[in-house]
Amino acid sequence: MRLFLLTLISAIFIYSPNAIAIDNDFPETHSRTIVETIVKGEINAAFNMIYPFLQATQVEQEKVSQGYQSLQKIVGKPFAYEYISTTEIGPSLRLLKYVIKHELVPFIFEVMYYWNGKEWTITFFKLNTPDEVFKIDELCPEELTYSVKGSQPDKEMNSFFTMLLNGETSSAYNNLFSLMDKSIYPPEAPGNLAKEYASTIELLGEPSSVDSLSGFTFGESIMVLCHGINTETRPIYTMTIFYKAHDTWAIVGFSNSDDEIFY
Image (tube, rainbow, N blue to C red; front, top):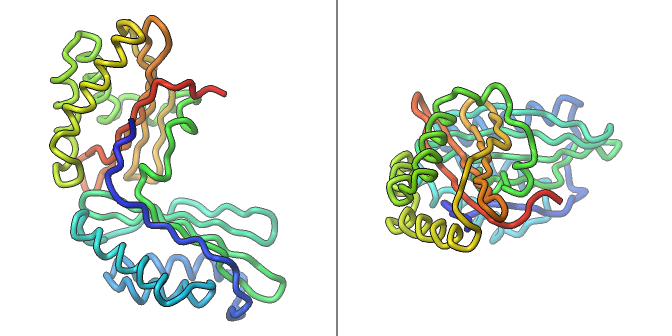
């Protein structure tokens, strides 16, 4: 089961030749100006810096802009951003990633720039919540990174799994969801996940141990942890996404699966 916290915002459009010629530093300076404009609360102005490069109708532009602004009623207004990375894909493509910080849930902004031999253009951009960016089947087959061990999220998950192994299923999920703001998940979520876990255990056999499968930080404010709960038949995999808006880590995404994820 996957707990979707927020609606995905994503815009992928086809490259349009109606672009403006600029210097070679354009991807870095332009993308940073976009996120700075978003943080200022000037959402329409920020998207207007993107759409001239894309074949998008006015209706499509307004849909994305209004959707993002509507979600701010739930997650709060943006107040800061983090630059994450620039990936050069050959000489002609650059993918830049940022985290846009809101009070309750962050958004990950990705934008691809293309050099057509004369000028830089934008081929697509995405603005997603972390649970849409990080997938359990893509993250779990890794070793736990050192930077995650001993962190507060790591300790919280160790406590959660200790309770599960002791048979305290309902208490474990209630405690886990106490780390999540109640405005971003339905009140029945902890109970439903506890029941699903109990049903899975009946099929796979009692749990005996828990393995840390992967963990990493995405910038300074997002941490992703994957674990495997070992049963008599096969593991149950979990992925938990933590977010630190200011000083305290909170959970913004949780999913589990008993499907085989090691291909």
